[in-house]
Length: 323
Ligand code: UDP
Image (cartoon, rainbow, N blue to C red):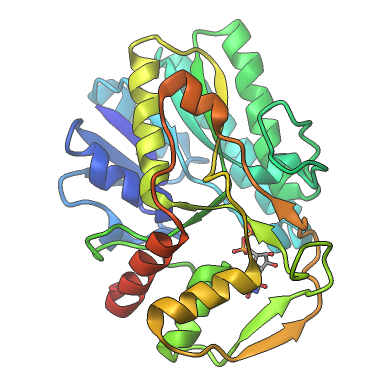
């Protein structure tokens, strides 16, 4: 049995849809930003909040939980600058409670969702796990603090973790049944597709004066299904005892500029985008591209889907969106 904390959210719900084919799954989610409709019908759903131990402590007695996936977090960079308290309480404070319960109930394995935001503004073309982590906002710092807590806990208690640092998760399940749905939406691909679908007036490009070939920021977009496969690969390796306390970057290893993403969306939908060039968004690094060589070499995982597949599945979801 596997506990998925935050299993009603974007990435968590995609993981549950696949994991349920192999394991029994319990989803714990407070539905603050997730959607109950996104949770696979075969999973057990518990409505609860990580910060309230009494809402989920019983799960560890009731079910033989082998491992925990932890997706539940606030993840808006701008909001984290305005309201750091929310980020340190919800992300760091609540995770501590979860970890302490895991120790109490002797649950060993945890797969933790971390982020490229832990690297801050790195000065290199391809970011591998050895690049120094110098986050530049409370969101990135909250994730890095949890990583550090995990490392300390693993030294002193019987905890075995995999930390997965995501680059730009995007796309949707190929079925079109689940996908990305944030409110407010801040991510580039859904924003462009909402506009092309006719429910957003235009797309603002945040800065065209970066030191990149076309002046717009470059990101490494990774299909949510590739992310799910990496999680399942990491789970299997953890359960078999093949890896212990590892950090892996998850990306495609290929960067696309904001303008290239918009052009690809136009090509796939055959609709022209109305663009407004705006100011830079505070805290945006010019280029973030992952090296995922470590997980490829150690676990044989590699992203298989390209930007076109990301946008095609995201467009299908946009046209079918149920929540
Ligand atoms: N971006 C943009 N307009 C938008 C949303 C995003 O120009 O309406 C840019 C943003 O500045 C960044 C890139 O698109 O350079 C990806 O942003 P997103 O928020 O999707 O992901 P992030 O890299 O911030 O996690």
